[in-house]
Length: 192
Length: 189
Image: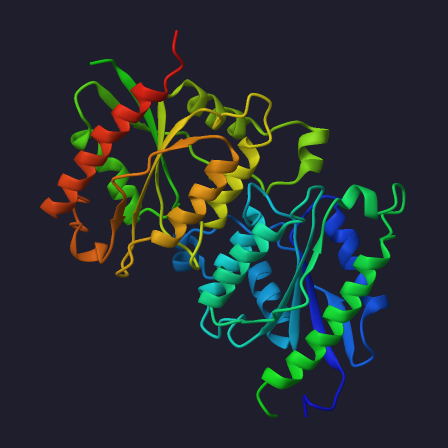
């Protein structure tokens, strides 16, 4: 029963660059997750073509899109850790969501999702989070509410060389969110 | 009437796109003195990754689109709505050009249009696009808004023509208002 077994949670990072604070944030999660939750990284969306219905219509869904969709389907829940580009969702991440949203057996349907973001400024990527909530709600995901993980002034909170998260407040908030997310997944999941 | 050179950007990549049909209709609905041409495509842009930018620089197609935007007196977006928001590929294009020195949307007059088979006509994508444009210091035209809902019945799918007279009328009004906005916010020489 999903109420009893360990949960399998997929972590999706919205940035592609090596030095990403959001990738660093995603790396902190396994150590901060409750015992009832096991995390794994999603395959990359970096090689997805730009969404074009003509591709879908002619040759079907690209293989890498299928792989990403399957990884999402198998998971009990998702954590999306993403930067904010131009007050909104990075195009690459949104493109990946656009692709899988077109599938029969659409992978975000009824999927519990939690959001996190890190950014250099005062809002910590929160504008992106509210757009992502809107977008994922339109494809029937279950968006976990609070606590939110919004890491502001990221350059002060991650170590220069190792990008380790050093800020205790952020660490505590992440632990609270992940514990709350575990309870949320168990509550909203269909009874097996 | 000054000559205004406007570029249009379509948010969909597919051949049969209603928003591409809309884009193609615009020259015939433009006020006197305004030419509207399609901007260079973003279809070959890689996914935004600052590592690319920092290693090999901005991809050529990104610079081509940015140059076209810079040279234009205004930009019109004709975009579908994907999942209650901006199509990822279009947002990716905006993300790329937003990173350039001499960021092309700064001070640029922008107008928004959307066509959708559903009734809401793309309102959600436009409000999200407004936010990105606000961050990039564009001057986005407030009104009239162009939300073409139930678009399947308004375009002739064979010829691509916009048949609906009321919609054509609204677009004419919007493009005239856009010309006025461009004139008003143009740098005073």
